[in-house]
Length: 95
Image (cartoon, rainbow, N blue to C red):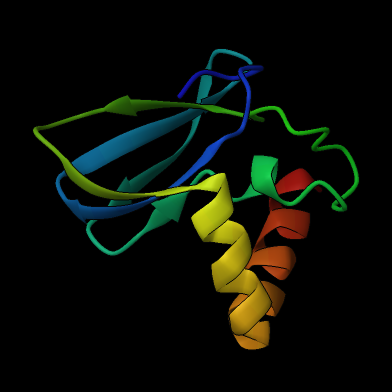
């Protein structure tokens, strides 16, 4: 996933590690059990406009579970608690 690219997938990291970069600087490193891609899929969160806010680069061999936009929308529609958690995290990442 590249910063500025279209947001069309949500991913859960099943194995391995990834680096998260914004404006060319590493801002985080994620490991197994972490997720990414949600900010671009939550268009009502200020500043997302449907584009990626960061790039994701693998640091090791990774395995991910990927949800399409449609699957993501169904998930947050069926699970209000998941939606609230993702929205809170997205807002924190944008501030």
